Image (tube, rainbow, N blue to C red; front, side, top):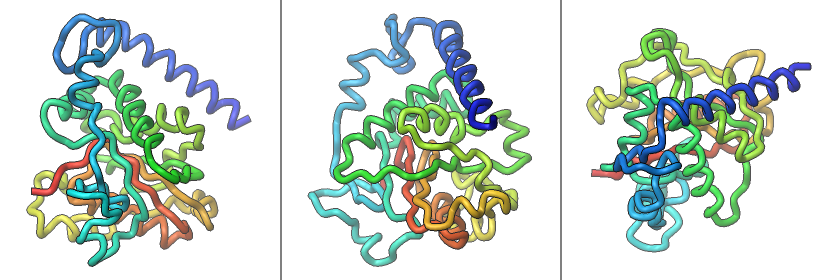
Length: 249
């Protein structure tokens, strides 16, 4: 009964996104504004999203060669095991995420999920997770924004991957400052003890491969803290699925 209800909700959500795509985002490219029948026009997709660059398979930071791990991950392994990203968080494609996150253009979420799905399909020896977990927002941030952008991306991504979505698997039990407003040396401490696994969902993590979904990964402290919480609860592997990766400065 619960699965059938979820399928109906997913179908209703997909219909709503299609309606939004035809009204809120009417027939123009979200980047260049040129008239087209898609959210992103083919020239922008080719120019800004057609390049595949070598990346560290663990943290997805760009690499200069074909090495599989960057020096940082070799020196100190994070709690997560792999990261896949669709593109670098840089102009002009960063506007897609800014419009979703701060402009509430929710109809962009399926496009971002699709771009991430394409990147996932390009991974060699890809092992699909058994469930997806969006990075949760705290109650105050969620009330202020009205939606969780990670969940909006995770919904269509779960359908594309045919992987079960667990939107309430993880809880943000401590309100934290936005990482973008925290000094780099303070970001890890800002996330300390911020996440917990919902007690009713903990049995799902035993021996499980979890995919953590987020919009942007910068220092990686947020997803690392959540990955560590998943592993403490019994997960054996954690993959990070993030739309954009901020290149190191």
